Length: 502
Image (cartoon, rainbow, N blue to C red; front, side, top):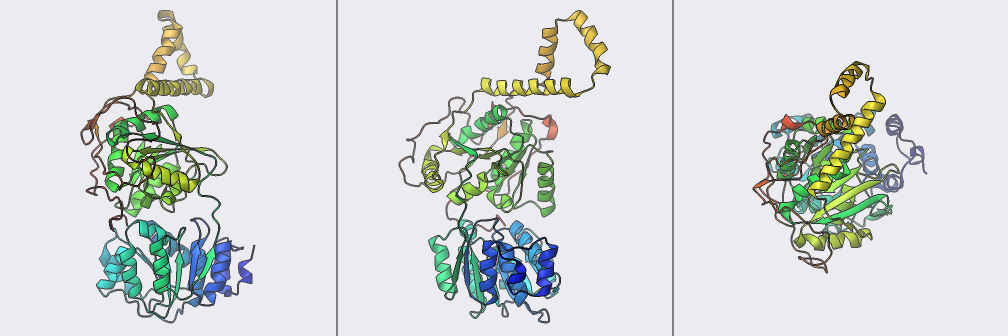
């Protein structure tokens, strides 16, 4: 691999990279930095995790004139998490050069960001909606922008930001350098390149594969109203150490995390409407094992490095294969195996076909466990807990009490009572999960109600009304309920425009 010292970059930037622990450039970094320093327009095609931020961050820092107080570089990112991460990394790259970097995004009070703009940042990293808002207020002036970067362009397309991006790009001087990064190149992204870029060089890094081989992938065909009961039963049987449940909307995440908590699981949700402090707190608890189940939207989970996840549950199937691969890639890391379970309604079976064709791997149909099987899973956990107590704990203080009980009761009955006390039996505490509209119909052999098996056998409780059945969990979180009302009124499926995810 090429060392950064061989890429004709300044000593100050080399020092910053060295302080960040970077010595050798990744393929996307080597190709992008060389061409970027020549002022060429670049299309970088690479997956997340290949070092894209440093790839465009180095040319940006090298070209910044710190004596000029105007905005000289603009980076557009799909989510505020990514905007924050990108701005922090560019700041570190430019630390020795003392370049000023500012991130702007929805969810933070706009007056605060307007005041920050008065400090004359030279590099702006922002989400489309907030950038456009600042431009229209005439508080963000882009007349001196020399470098424009679109990061994860396909993700911005999926989130309905393409019109915003076109409007922002039209506000930037035509004489500029444009760098576009995208894992895939759908037609609308190609059109942006054709319209706004000049003879772009393509730096394509081959993906290591659309899916990870050591992840066992299953699907459950079920109606919307049945999905939550099935999820809890699967959780009781599989007993994941750390699990992520993906929901399509913010309302969905709020309702799922609340419902799981009511049923006794240690669950918390993250999505774009939560404050940064709250999300970081939830993620810290998840990484430390204080939360068993993280419920998240695609947007909130984007770009987060979470290790140790054993199971991923797609409560709602994503509408594009790339999102599916990104979701399940949260498990099966560092050579470990993982399990991914995707719920599919009969009308969404066409999406399952498209995912399978893209990943070139068939998912295994799963027949959901019954209530009795879910109970067996909880009983098995109780046996493991009791065995662990016997093997690891100092029981001296309890042996006298045990001897007294053995004089009165049969030993088998005592052990059975202890196991029953440890078993969290499936409960029927009512919870409310609003039905989401299915994704727009996609053609294919298995769309509609026919096709592959794996359907649900059992309780058909009504959607939007309380669900009953299939509960239980691994913790005594019982009293932690409380209503968390969703902020998003309905499903944002299909191509609808939304700035909410920011």
